[in-house]
Amino acid sequence: MEKNNSKKTVRLVLCALFAALIAVGAFIKIPIPYIPLTLQTLFTMLAGLMLGGRLGAISVCVYVAIGLAGLPVFTQGGGPMYVLKPTFGYLIGFAVGTYVTGVIANKTAAPTFRRLVGANLAGLAIIYLFGMVYYFLISHLYLGTNITIRNLFLYCFLATIPGDVISCLVAAAIGKRLNPITRKYVV
Image 1 (cartoon, one colour):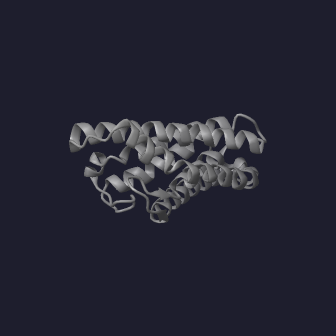
Image 2 (spheres, rainbow, N blue to C red; image 1 turned 135 degrees about the vertical axis):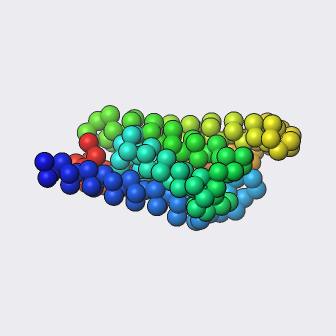
Image 3 (cartoon, helix red, strand yellow; image 1 turned 120 degrees about the horizontal axis):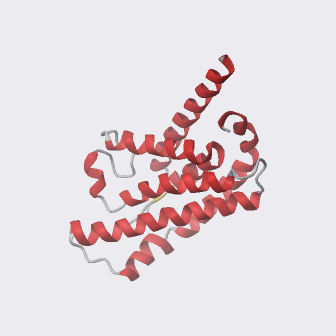
């Protein structure tokens, strides 16, 4: 019984740690037009790789809930009105992408570097899908700005994808080293 409780405690601490890392990652950013490049992507991928799909997604949801509750942990503040910001779709994408990354990466007991990179790229595709669709819809339906598909693709994909692909590789390298350590607590 005590071993099970300590495992639950470690899971709780790891989820809280990743929620905090994602929050810190929001403030480490490279400013580019429209969507700032942050380390959030790196930390959400690591959450999926190291905690698995369910716990990784929970850590992202905790981060989003804290931000929506009013703590300024998002790149542009926080609060319930943040759902009306065009970039909120990326936060939704973080949760879904982290889940997918974790599920793909942890299908085997000892995932290869290649599997981890593939899992990260799949999660990244989901982040971009949610983020870009939400950005387009909020821009048109709420803000009344007419961002073209071309500009959406240019600023919300092409400008940020190189840094995020590097994040995929870095997260896979870190995950490959740390996954064996966390796996005994989260599986």
